[in-house]
Length: 472
Ligand SMILES: Cc1cc2nc3c(=O)[nH]c(=O)nc-3n(C[C@H](O)[C@H](O)[C@H](O)COP(=O)(O)OP(=O)(O)OC[C@H]3O[C@@H](n4cnc5c(N)ncnc54)[C@H](O)[C@@H]3O)c2cc1C
Image (cartoon, rainbow, N blue to C red; front, side, top):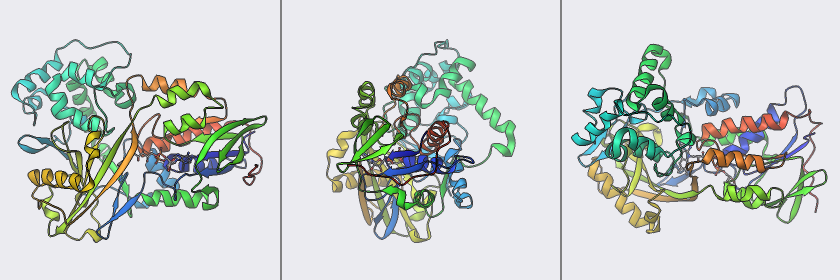
């Protein structure tokens, strides 16, 4: 019987799991749930910082709408009316000739017909000719995993891959397309090849389907919350109950007990019938070394890369200098940043007034050395490159660098098998969840929270909730 659950990690994954555990028990009494969070406050990467008197998101600022679970979580928390669409849509690609707009209806940036391939912005004439061969090349039929790069290069050639598609797809994971797993990132691309024989035809089929759906297919690609995504964290904390969330409580080990488990934190032991590890995988590896030694190597085997965001606020009167779009992505090595978000276009705030506010991403797979530089050098390099493609002054009025060390899990080829192996090596009652496993974004964290809670609650109905009882 699951009476007491300890959730380790108070990011969105951990908080959402706690919330679902407390609210999804049906008629039965929910288990007693305690969240242990190492940091000063719950929320994990969902956080904002002050830059020149403005509050700017340093982590997530939106979630994808085609995966409905984050929006569902917001609605369940009573935040449905506060879901908002971005003010701008569409994105640009960095090219030698400046920024060029991705065709608005090109799924994953891939053109849906031959005419578009021969107009493909940012790709040379020979690169376009090679990409067009996608329509006639034999399709790979095997269902085994491969790298995104291997699939894209085989179908579209190296140039279109590196200059146009990889910046968009790799960028979401701060990853290297030649290492990222197709199955764990964009499995639909493999399906397009298998079923349509070509990525261009796959993109065409998606576009046709969306057109056939008419207005029902409309709607923004991303959603946010008015007032910022911290409101999701606030909603979760309020529903879970601040008293159940122990901040500044880093868990150090999960121990086995004759009647279940005990989670060690601050040299004390908290007994639990089930433990949910919603931390980075390398932390989970240390935590389970006693209860699941066979899971340790696979948990440690999930690589992470470090990134940083440069949050720049420009002087009054600059807001209109930014093109009407959400931002741009950059092919590997062409600029110090890998992508930029035009925050004042995407999520305009009264506090921004008429100032341009831009967030640039630096670091990530293959570019972590950029992070060795001092903050002021990173700001200088990023601002100079921004000013080269957008009508902005050479330097912002104020800027801040927020570093995210070992923050982005890399779903390399074989990732899903590794996750299955980890799950298979965990004893009943121990669960892992969060961005390391089955989806890096908030929407996937929300979905995994539902799954884990259902699996825990799926056992016998629990007795009345009990207070967390520390035992020494
Ligand atoms: C710069 C950046 C921008 C992003 N933008 C977006 C976006 O726009 N949209 C989107 O969907 N996703 C985005 N992401 C990804 C998103 O942040 C993650 O999907 C999500 O926040 C992961 O939540 P989580 O709970 O799994 O992990 P985290 O938020 O990392 O939470 C893990 C928690 O575990 C705690 N912890 C660690 N060790 C211990 C321990 N031993 N004991 C107790 N607690 C511990 C940590 O302190 C942390 O609070 C972005 C990520 C970054 C880095």
